[in-house]
Length: 60
Image (cartoon, rainbow, N blue to C red; front, side):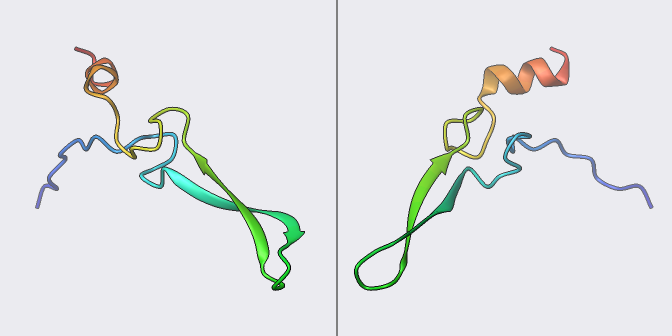
C-alpha cells in the first residue's frame, strides 16, 4: 500500500515546537527555577513555515 505523502507547513528548524522554556539556573524566592521563553527564529514562534518559504522548499 502506498503511503500518503502530503507536505505539511511545519517549520523544519523547530519541527513544530516553536517556543521552549530554558532554565536560567537561578531560583526565585519561593524556590522554583527562573525560566526564559525562547521562540524559533525561522518561523518567529508560529510553528509553521510562511507560504513564501514553503513554496521555495517545494521548488516553485
